[in-house]
Image (cartoon, rainbow over all chains, first blue to last red; front, side, top):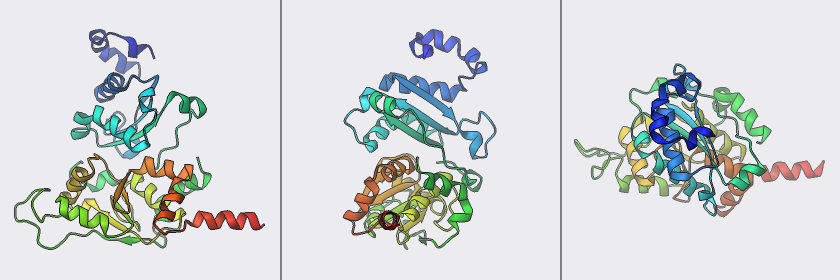
Length: 132
Length: 161
């Protein structure tokens, strides 16, 4: 995607405009930037699924990331997910409440470019007084 | 993905209230006074978590219980285990115990819930369990634990017809 090749300052300056264009809020953009830097993905989707978990649209608490990267080659799923977690350590310690991950190599993505449907929310967030 | 799992997700809470695994949150006696998640003897200490993950071949840390999951991802784990006929496992509701909730994240170095342990070893969360279900790895891992997946019997019945 073109935004991955934009120089950082330009990306930041375009931030507000990008949100209006549907690239997501500040957390979505931070997640995208960190995953791009850490994993050089050939394909990257950062999806704010917060509205499916009882939050208002754009709440930025629950995300799904689809990361396609050669860095995953030879790594079992657990290690792939750990790489994603490492890139997003600060966000996971903060506002990022839940993270669903699809982590494939470019070859795997070419063979199967579909993302499994997400499980329905059961309102768990409403039951909690504090977040993770 | 498997139409069966998709159907299971649609059943949602209704299905989760069927015959279920053991819903229990184990808050061990004698939590350290004023201790945080890592307080010695506290429910979130490495020793306490170690005891829990070794207590049974299949151990799940989740939100809610198998009878009443409170999170879609936790419910997905319960549904997948149910598809394989695994109803006898240890489930711990981290919403009941903040020290345990933090303790398991420290123990597995994994930031989210649910968490699945097979034979005392951390396997991953809901996404990984789903992958294992889809690619046949879960049937193999259960077999190593001496648990015969119900899906093997379903396959056999199919072949008989």
